[in-house]
Length: 126
Image (tube, rainbow, N blue to C red; front, side, top):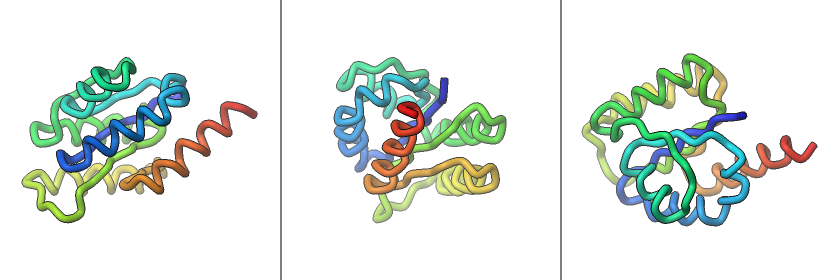
């Protein structure tokens, strides 16, 4: 079973929840890991089972990066707020770097997320 990580900055949590609701059926076929606040919202509002790590600011981004490096995560959906500075920006950059180093798909916005989830759905159908 493929594993997907879900992360969203505070101003993007509504977007990731809406996206997850729309893609609920497809997401239900994956093992989901999320930072704590994002995971709680997806559990409560979408009804999907989610393994939660720490919040991003407490090291959750780093925990997910470690799992990407260990080849435990197949894609990362990280809805970022490009207009807000984050105090844990070095952790965010490290996660993005690890995705690039290990060739793991990384969606940082809705359009990229739609393309990646559609691609995974097509892989499962074939």
